[in-house]
Length: 194
Image 1: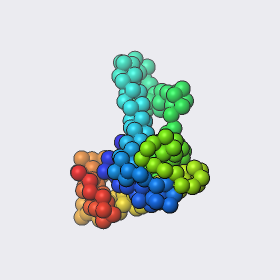
Image 2 (image 1 turned 60 degrees about the horizontal axis):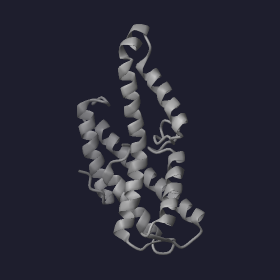
Image 3 (image 1 turned 90 degrees about the vertical axis):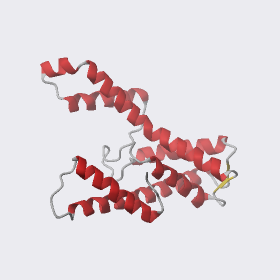
Image 4 (image 1 turned 60 degrees about the vertical axis):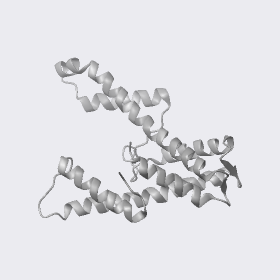
């Protein structure tokens, strides 16, 4: 998933705390945070499931692709794009769509619409303002948080670059250090990653 579950929980808490009680009142704050967190996690997991399905499809044709000299990455991209258009899935990865943040603007907008739909139907919420105004506030909170998260990621990468020896991105050592430094930076925001 693009964002760890602890980060999704933190984001859900931020949405509830920043919108309550004037914009979107949470009649059951704990249930509201859980509902929001679950919806965001499900939306982010949708693309992961799609990626896994594409890997399974390509696994069936690996011998054929090897014999024909077809690039795995190229076929992965083509099949994924086909499935995305058929199923009308909104791309989650922002960097895949040219956005600087981890999540695409389209995905943030899609999630905000789904959150508003959930808020209108749920007993955990009472909408106090125009639904589109509330939705735009959700987009703002999401965007501000993702910009902060991008700074955290950059800070973790900078710490790795300042090591005495060169550590190549993608190696196990790099990934371990990145997780550690990322967790330290998130801790400064009050997010504890396991």
